[in-house]
Image (cartoon, rainbow over all chains, first blue to last red; front, side, top):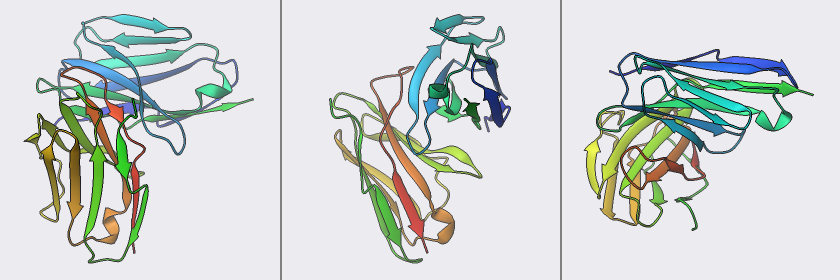
Length: 110
Length: 113
């Protein structure tokens, strides 16, 4: 079945450094969503990408969808302590059944 | 908007007991999803509904798990009998339509001893 992998699994950065997480699907996706989960919390929607090669920005966050619609990335510029959490991608199939990636846990050291 | 409401927040039970988790989706949302989260397996999709009809239950681990959605404002996930390996956080999420964001509830932390 469909699998969605993310790397790295963990990332520790100093506050102010950049951070990138990569998401790879075993199958072509219809769309991809990104979520953030704070420790002890629930996943919260960040953004959705639909078009091949699409790039979207939210303040310090930049999201990309690959040309083949099988991979995506999230880049955070100048991390802050409020960025701490686990970032998940969720790949949508033709039936819009969302399979979540393995997640990248970000720790920001002040 | 109260968001997706799940109950109970925590459940501790003994192996062999029946467990029922409850979810009230956001009003007007046509899609409802049940996910399970563990450290080892991450966020797993168990089942999802569209307009109260189960669309895909291929993620349900085994026959001990069952889910129902008797109406647009209520869904249950039942485990009978429960086993220690069922211990996890169970999330319910709803969505207003295809290719729309998922809104998650706060989850139910289940511990089976």
